[in-house]
Image (cartoon, one colour):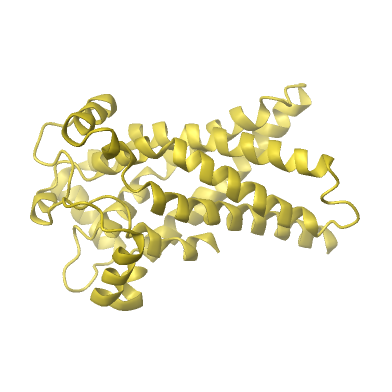
Length: 275
């Protein structure tokens, strides 16, 4: 569900050279240019990446969390397991993440969207195999802390609410409680890690001629920069606000997506147990 909900809000992420006009204005502009198809451009790549990524992510998280809990490490289990699981899934799915970012930025689309497979082949042909892991370091810097904070916050908030009797008398309430805890924790974690998301996006769009053609902010045309160099460059050229560009649309996308994803996951587990 979250994979279908989020694509329109990706349009609001920072890529323009001019000041971001606002989330709703960006959505209206995108819809006026391409209709619903424009809002959901890149959905096939998102699904192609999201399904195996989430399967690997949840499986790794639960396996490591349970392993740590059996060794009486309950307090740190969500934090450590969340970060480690995300590191595994991000590294495995890095090529598809790069592809999704390119599609959403519309830097390689003509009047008609190219297929994901042909676009991936073109990227490798024109930019070399290294393009498949471009931005991986900055993505890890964003996603590992995010997932560690997210799972720690979700598990802690859910446990605290359960201790207050929020789920007494009904197992169905547990997925709903998970949805609320997950959305809240996801929004907080998204806010904290926004600077790394900005750096990640700039890194993946780096050194692309189309970046200059479409007026994309970033380090296009310069020598490849490391994560801290990129962050320093953004601070120098755009100030502190530059690192927090796109905070509102990111929270608006991440918070409900986290709630829907984990809430649906827990509901499916509950349904399977009933069978």
